[in-house]
Structures are given as C-alpha cells and as structure tokens.
Length: 127
Image (cartoon, rainbow, N blue to C red):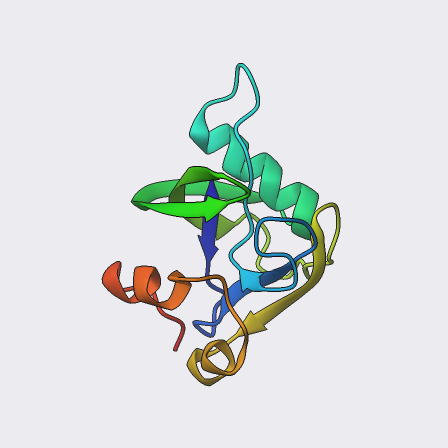
C-alpha cells in the first residue's frame, strides 16, 4: 500500500527507502498489508511507522506493479489526509529520510521507477 499525501502548499510527502526493493530511492510511504488488515488500515499504519504522521485513508488512486527480488508487488496507492496539518514527519522504520517536495523537488530526486508517471496519470503531482 502507498500513501499519496499533500500538505497545505501542495507539496508531496516522500520517503527515501531504507530496504529493498528500491533501497535508496525516493517514493511515497507505504508497505505490506498484515494479516487481518484492510488496505486502508495498512496504509494508515505504514505511514505512522515510516513518518510518524497520523493520516486518514481516502480514495484509491490506482494500483501499480513493482518488480523486486524475483517477485512482482502489486501496490494500491491511496490519497491520504494528515489528521494534524501541523505535525511534522520524521523518518522511521523502513525510511532513511523524509521530505515534502514540490514539482521541481520531485524531478530532482532519484525516485522509484514509474513513480512520477503514476502520479501524473492520477493527476496528483505536487505543485
């Protein structure tokens, strides 16, 4: 599951992945669904673990397929809203770093394959 989170200025929240697949590349926060969780519950938990933020899961934006270590992951990305817009993200768990980025910032980062294209396709690129 992945979380597409924008702040009040239209910037997008990204994390630098600390583990495979795509270690060292920037992406939206997210991870696996644990047994007994819904996709929405999983995305809320993963955001909290990776950034410390509390969010509410919104609409499903789409699904992407990500190859990694001999398997292909199907990731559902949700639009998410911060519960407290004043709360600041802090890298944790599987994230080495965290940042709010605008469109130029996104273009300057080494991101996971297909991230910018998926965001553009869903019309959720940062301003």
